[in-house]
Image (cartoon, rainbow, N blue to C red; front, side, top):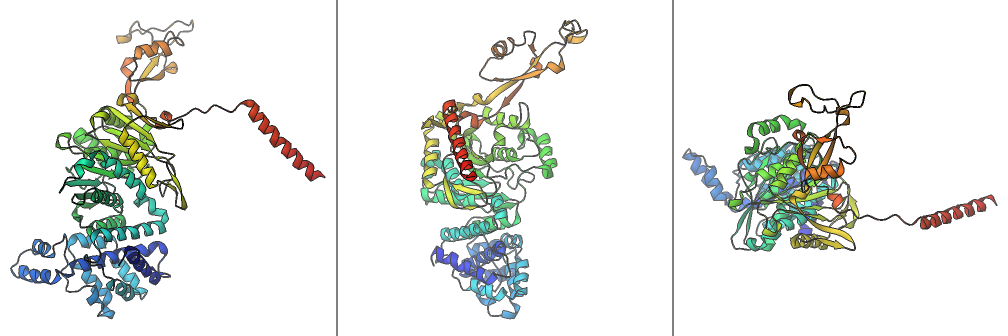
Length: 580
């Protein structure tokens, strides 16, 4: 059965649900049933052997699980004598039998159906008199691996996930990164390693700490399979939303991955993969979400473990946790001597510039740049995501930069690279075409300054170009005769007392000498000023938009006047016409 037919068959189940279910709820039935039928078909051939093995091992009073996994030849098994076809033989007890059947799966699969709240759907379908009809539909579709291989099954499943995400638009963005954005990120992630990735039998580990329904992991898997069919990508993830987690885990199961690598829970407060490091990582964390709920755990780790934990460089303000995910990924990088890592993360604009010198955000940027971890930042068009129209940026981070990139950061402004969508989905009105993705990938790969039609597209900077020192400029307090007041005790004795009301700060680029700057910018305006060096702080910010700003001179006055006169004359003519 071809993919469109398969999807449309599964879609035909929706016709049965219409009326009893809202459109946005179809996925709650169709996704778990699709998974159930697939697993049913995958296990069919080994089921008799598994049941026989179970009887032998239980008789010998041994834990049968390891033996059953071996017999099933999969990462999972089912020990019920029932399957979907047999369930059809007892129409009156279908609910009870279906529950019993699902209960006999190995724990990792049972967990998927629990997160789907499948038992609640069985009750609901039963009440509506639909359970037998829906089960029968699925029992009659052939999803055997020799008919539908893992890759095809994976893409069918993703097609369904996408359809349901579009139908329940209000939450789509939370669990869903646009496919073409993931493609771009995967391209940028793999481009420098293409040679290494085509070696036969290569195994690479990929991780997504905010896995959603598993889209990033899937696209990366497809990409590597295209580059090298003999390569194996082992996928790891963690997800907080129970339904997204169930979908991601089911998708991985269908693709033949070990679902024990997909963990449920909050990545920031309870890391599901402690001590593990990965070759590649991808993430689209929620934009600008506060982390008040987990503040206690995060602060405790930062204070007690410092740089041995994940949050040594600093903590951002509680209203936006984006940079915590960045630090989490940095902590998961393989050490450079073990081959290093590269990762891509989508962030909004605030991590680039929020927070002055000494703030948590600035300290995190300082850590990233002083340790030469940022390869590139790519500005995407607005209106690219389902749940927000804001500007977004892809950071490419690596601890194994190629020689020409060492000590440097590439900024790419791809905000004009888009095509309008025929039909918008939520806030998403624009998309990247395959040509745009190719173009951005090439610009990144070339690592050169680039201007098109007078507009800068790619610029290369030294890491320290984004650093500055915030100096505190003091001026003396004066008495009523206008003379500077001098200190009378301690180390300030005999020196002018600073007037807090006249205190000011200046940001001096790291590349410039503070004294030279002070003599040029401050002394001519305030000859009595001095710098309080004890208060100097180092800060880092990446003013992305300023680097791509192109000044457009205003139009000549005569041109504007002529235009205004034309408009005024037209209005007068219209008024004249009305008064006739």
